[in-house]
Image (cartoon, rainbow, N blue to C red; front, side, top):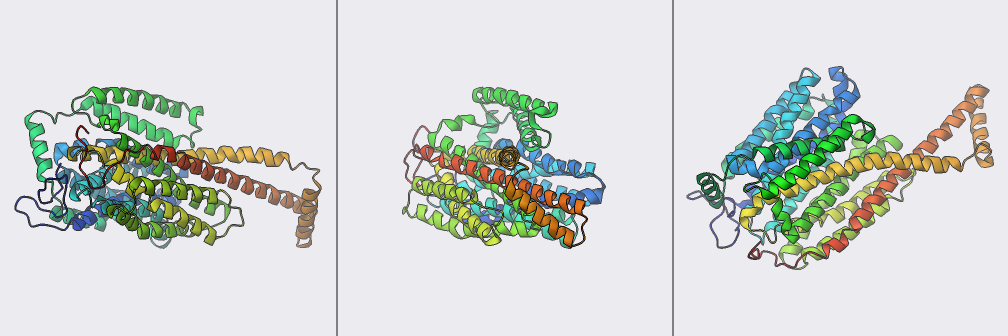
Length: 544
């Protein structure tokens, strides 16, 4: 595909935008336009989390029931995401993108006005379908709008959006629910969606080469709907997301429902892989993974999703449950890290574009920094204050600022322009899988490691331990002196130390999660060394 809306050039893309007789448009106008809706969608993945207790109270349902508000959105999102490239070709990329924005915006209104949980869940499913197509289509638009030599800067903007939105979501959601009403968590999308539709209709257009490709495919019958592929990928994605999102809640394989979800997802994806590799016009083009650099990049997208979403979920949970932070205060710990990424991601892009640092070298540097940040987290105690958590998040942000841009440059380094659209669906699919896997990993691992530490620590604190007994007696005496009965003061003293034991072991479980993410990140360094050399801004080699 040629550059989206850009003047024709002999290379895969150029900066400057036009469609036939259209007046040239600055590519950054297009970049900011499409990033707006993607930011809105990614914000919605986390903004509703802190509002769940308020929603439960407002609709008169239990907390367990309203957690399906998150699950239904993620499932619908996961189903549509890998199919976005196919639907872009069927309907036209601009038409499909605007349709997704419109559906997301309208269903946000339905979510905000929902009179019951049933209506809210149906609205969230439709909202997830609309939101699932935004990120991959934006990425393909960015790739086609900017020339290979300028893509790093566009990827820096995309990095800022996908990192900042999940970080500020809990803060914004907490502030809205505390000061207004939980319904505004959804209604806030309306003005953003309307603005996005207006800007997209004005400034975004399908590139001539993309339109020519669609016309040629229609004339040759190449736009036939891959019904079997859609069913296999859709069911496989939905059941996999249900398995990851509900596994810990429903006791993993102790639940027949979760066991069936796992079995169905494995069967569907196994069949989907075979079908898609043998189909002439697959719903997702798995053949792209035969390209070494692209395959390696998708693995890094997965690891990026694991580290970012796992820690973004885990840190507020630690601060709220163990340190007594409010949701807003816990969310503010994530803010400095997002600011660092916003500040430094463009720097990383310039280092690559100017040829000062090779993408592979910058990626390895990033892996080392992120590994160090995770190991730094793993040494925290219950006495660690806000500043240390915020600084640790800044260190993590410093690493991620130089992580996503080189990955994206590497991913498209050896692909033909006509492969960009399908490639964006795969990269976002792996990033989405990484995020779901990361959240499921830390949710399950933290609980299991807490149980392990509790058995170890508890085993080393027998009732005859002199130091413990002395501490219990001292606290019991203090409580008795302040009005407690002898029996109540002793019971309260033991309860205090039991609670302290639980807090300590729960923190140890979380610290183990940071350590595991750190080692997973470090283990990717040898993989980075396998990246094939390429010239930034150069043409894809023949045959790729």
